[in-house]
Image 1 (tube, rainbow, N blue to C red):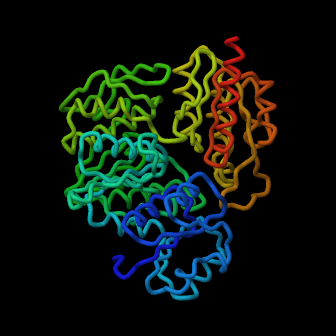
Image 2 (image 1 turned 135 degrees about the vertical axis):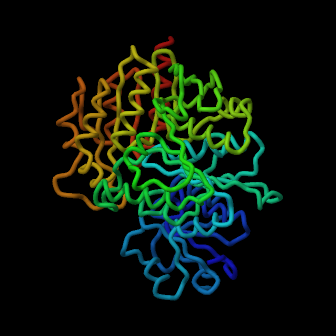
Image 3 (image 1 turned 30 degrees about the horizontal axis):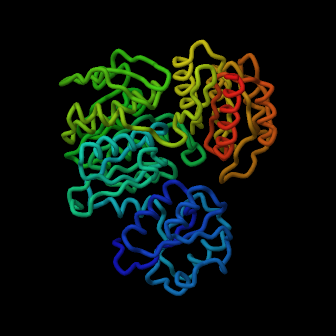
Length: 470
C-alpha cells in the first residue's frame, strides 16, 4: 500500500509514544492529522499546539466532520491498546474506512529507505536515540521514529533533510509488542535483549524467542545484525539469520567495553572491537546497561563512516531520553533519578548502576508495577531485583489496557522483598511517606502514570537541599 489518494489521517490512540511520532511525520508531510486518546497528557498537548486536533471522548460526535465524510481519502491508524468496545473503532470498521495498525504504517513509511531497526525487550529506545544522535552529529542524512522523547531534540521524531531524501538512513524502534516488529524491512538490525516479556501476547518464553527469530530473519541478505551476546545465546543458532552477525556486550569477545568507571552523573569506558580501540569515552547517561547500549550505537556509527572524534563528541553531547536514567536532582547528599524500568531485568540493571555511582548512600526506590499480567508472571523476579535497595515503596499496579486479575496486587511482591524497609503506599499518600522516610538517593520506577509525580518529587527534593544548606 502507498498513501496515494490519502488526505486525512486519523489516529486512534494518538497520545501513544509510537503513534505520536507517526502523527508528527504525516503532519510534516502535509496531511491533515487528527486523533483520539483516552486522557490528556503532555504529548497530546504538544500535538495540539503543533496543529493536530485531539479529542478525549470516544464518541461519534467528536470525530471531525472532514474525517467522517471522506472514507475514501482517510487513513485510520490504530493501536491494539484501543479497547475492543471502542465506539470510534467500531464506526470506522463498519463504514469502509482503510484501517492500519501503527506497525503496518511504520513498515510502509520506512520500506523505501535504508532502515536500521533496533529491537529488544529493554534498551531499544536509548540505543535507537543514540544511533540517530551519533549519525546526526556526523551530518549524515538521518530520520528516526523513536519510543521516547529525546532530551537533545525534545521529540520522538527526528526528520531527515528533504534534499537528501533518497540517501536518508531511517532509525526505527522495532517493538516486539503485538509482533509489531515483523512489519519492518531492516537493512541492519540491533537486538539489545531477548528476555521474556509480553507473555499476555506470546504465551511463553519460547514463543517470544521465536518472534525475535522471525524478526532477525527479515534483515536484508546484504545487511548486518548487531546482537548482545546474552540475547544471541538465548535465541540459539537455529533462530539466527544467515547474515553477517556481530556480538557486543560488556564481557563479549566481539564489540566490548574496557576500563569502565562509574562516576556521579557519567560513565567512562574504552570501546574495543577486533579492528579498533577508541579510548576514554564519556557517556553522560549513567548505567552499565547504557554503556552496553552505547557499544551497539558506536558499532552502527562506525559502519556508516562516523569518525572516532565525531563519536566522542556525539557521546559527550547525548543527553538521553526522558524517563531513562533521568537525573532530576543531583546534590552531594540528595539525589533523585526517574526511570521507565518496568521489567525485573531492567530494574536489576538500573539499581546496580545507581549503587555503583552512590555506594555510600541509602537507596530508596518507589516502584509502580505495570500490568496485572506482568506483575503475576514476574513476581519473583520483581521482588528479587527490588531487594537491591535499602528501602522499597510499592504503589498500586497501573492497569493500562488490562482488567484486574483476582489475587494479583502489589502486595504479592512485598512479601518476598528482602530490603530493610518495605511498604505499600497509596499514590496520594506518597509525599507524606517520603517526608518520614528521609531519602538520600531516591529513584522512581515504572511505565504507568508515576511520571505525573516526578515534578512534585523533584521540587520537594530541591527544597530539602535548600533547608539542609541553611
